[in-house]
Image (cartoon, rainbow, N blue to C red; front, side, top):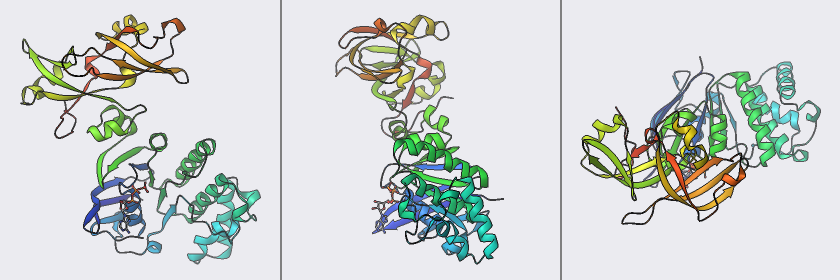
Length: 380
Ligand SMILES: Nc1ncnc2c1ncn2[C@@H]1O[C@H](COP(=O)(O)OP(=O)(O)OP(=O)(O)O)[C@@H](O)[C@H]1O
């Protein structure tokens, strides 16, 4: 069985930890994405896995075998880079065959594999074309065909779609997933583009400053970010994060946001009772703020807090509107929220900028974060 595991990887340059105790495991047939901002250490992890870089600490296991000290060739890893790593002096056939010739396979076997991979990626008519006569999308498919033909134990991708325009990128994502499914080995894909990560990943890991912040399925990370970094990084637009205070009233906890007091779900009771610090960061997802024209319908399924707000900006998206809202202030500045609402059936329901309206907040859906540790508080 093919699995990829990294255990406690550390890489330092000039005394700085670029990769800082990173561990994860990619199962057979799993598509795993490493997502993080530029400079967070993603490429370095990939280079350590394929053997182009040695870690200062930690191990790389392929199929349970420690390959940390093996050369890249001994690891049988298929890699697609951002610039595809194609040879301009060779035609498409030569580029797909290149890795196989290095493996010293019989000529007939090489030909069979090249033709099969070319067929799967619709490259058959292009086999004799020079690389520099191909479009970006076609070059990207040649790079994919090359790892498909290799029969590698693991596929690694380093931002392979970054040079494609939006339309081609969509098709190329499907090609990447098709190649992954054909071989069913672990795939590790590095990107800083969250929409790409969320579209491709079975599971993803968020990386920042050399450390893994959270690992899970796209839904788990969107629904339950482990800390403020993940909450700010994921989602389009990301979760609203507002400074608030916990107050207790007749044995119940409420959250004060500006002049608003939201009752908190009973599940928070024991975790809040154990805290000394009243200050809190409240997380509210833009699509969970109920628009004025859906209040009654939403209240039929969940008790909501109705809150007054003022629409500061209203921006039409495709089928949705993004509204910046100002909540009533108490002493400090008024809290601002971003809401994304489906376009109302009656366009007259759309708020105008500057108008007062009522929104609904579901206290069960609030997330709470500790302002010092920046970690999400967990209910019992
Ligand atoms: N050989 C090296 N010597 C010194 N510093 C390096 C070296 N290689 C990488 N770094 C530094 O390590 C950090 C992480 O780099 P890395 O390329 O792994 O990040 P990344 O998350 O893949 O970024 P990007 O998305 O921009 O490719 C960066 O600050 C980079 O400058």
